[in-house]
Amino acid sequence: MATPAPGANAAPPSVPARRRNAELVLTLAAVGLSALCLSLVGLQTEGRFPARFALYSCAFGGLAVAAHIAVRFLAPWADPLILPLATALNGIGLAVIWGLHTAAGDGPAESDRQLLWTALGMAASVAVLVAVRRPARLQRYRYITLTAGLALIMLPMLPGLGIEVFGARRWIGFGGYTVQPSEFARLLLIVFLAGYLGHKRDALALAARQLRAGPVKIFSLPRMRDLGPMSAAWAVAILLLVGTRDLGTSFVLFSVFLAMLYTATRRKSWVGIGLAMFLAGAAAAWGIFWHVRQRVAIWLDPFDPELYRSVGGSRQLVQGLFALADGGLTGVGFGSGRTAALFASDSDLILISIGEKFGLAGLAAVLLALFLLTERGYRTALVSRDVFAKLTASASAFLLSFQVFVVLGGVTRLIPMTGMTTPLLSAGGSSLVSTWMILGLWLRLSDTARRPSSAVPARAAAPEITRASSHA
Figure 1: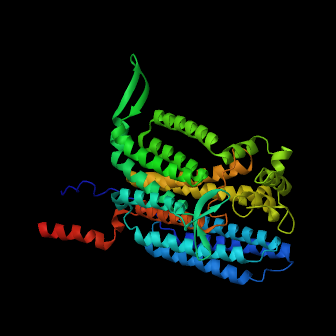
Figure 2: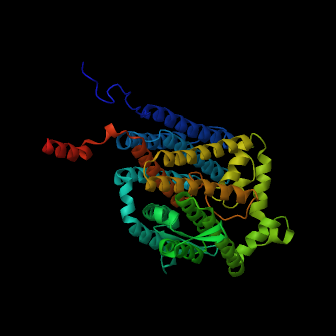
Figure 3: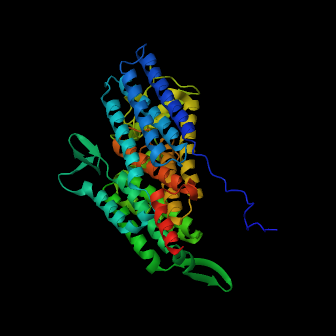
């Protein structure tokens, strides 16, 4: 009797479903949610549907469907929830920006610009899918991405190109538009750090100097020949950001650095060293920059009359707190409220505007959507097979989630305000486009991680077949 070959009766490995149809249904639902928000804006401010309701709904819906079709063909195994969640958040942000400027009598110029940035952001996300077919290859170019990231941060320092606004030199201008290069530099620096840590992970985790008190290990220090180049490059990036007065981005990037270092090595002592360095840097910033001292004073006592009446004082924060309280549980709608006349209500204070217009229920729903979106980034890191993909996905997910924490903590007086934007919601092209690029990278990483081995593209498997036939 013939003996069955080993493994002949083994069950075939489970193949994850592509779920592209589910993604399409959810994306269309997200477009419908955006259209509902736009209709509420018109009904509450003008008593009718907005004049551009059909144009905005069709344009935004067409962009979302086009992005879905691109994902269907370019990344068929990608996570099916990333695109619908991003579409819903982007659509809500577009509607709120439209409503704020309509209530203020400013016209549709800002919302038109936001729709244009949305198109560029979705196109950039698709471009990432086209350009990055093998994510692991990115770690070969880690020093190129480092150089490009540092060059982007330095651009606003160039005379004639950089633009200074409220004492900060973060932007470059051309053709009537402004771009904040540091938003794009963050992704390049994350790719560099993921590539470096993926290459040096074992040396960093194992080769460390142990400080002991007898037989008890109390601390471990990294070898500077392993940690030094990475720390030096990151320190240069942080110092350049501080030089452009972009303290919020420097704070977030430093936190990303610590999170990635701990993820790669699992050494708590190194995080302690990083926190000590942060405290030293915060003390130095307190002594050097007057606006840091002012923001801390605003955080500690925003209701001080002198501070409230001063230029650049606490009026913005106090009025935002009042607006958030006015929103109550269900919101005041776009026909009333104080955020339309509040400075940066469509960018730095977009969460306050959402809380006032939609109430605590609406703000909680938006925060839940942001939480679910970043959760998909962490899930992508968990299912990824190689260290570089895990570090890239987890670091970019931490970047977005920590950015939301910094913004929400600032507008609610949990921490001092930093002047950062909320991903996908705030007005501004640089933040929106760079966030969509991160999402495009998540789609590619999740497609690579979820793709079964039997679904490897034919052109990638052809050399293996050829070599096997030559040895037959």
